[in-house]
Amino acid sequence: MTTTTDPRFAACQTASWLAGWLAIDPMMIEAMRRDGELIAVREPGSTIWLYPGWQFDGRVPLSSIPRITRAARETGIDETRLFTILAAPRGLANGSGYVYELLHEGRADDVVQLVRAG
Image (cartoon, rainbow, N blue to C red; front, side, top):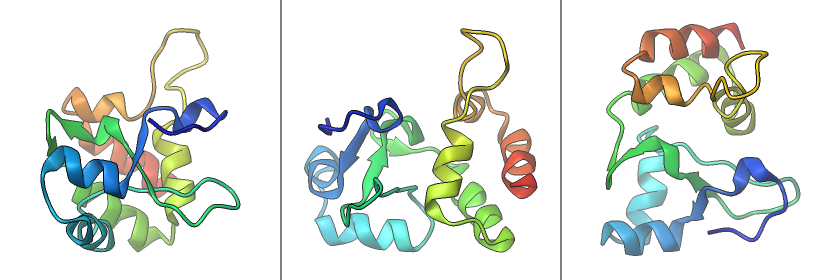
């Protein structure tokens, strides 16, 4: 886990940690991020990419991630804004969950619409 005080980053891991967990070369993690297969974000003032754990189903990235990153890139949304959209609460009521949970519910179309709306 990261040592951040911002709760949005609490479930994020570094590329080196993620590479060890997935048993792949750390350069592969970077390539997957650049290719839109993984979502990563940097904390303000940091140069270290952090990878949210919610984008995985077990040890496999969700199949909807490339679609989400493509929608963000086509709309001109950077990594920080994309992370902010996905880590946002789903509704006004406490306990309503987070946008990224829609991906685990098979509602990628809804997430794409939210991303495109910016």
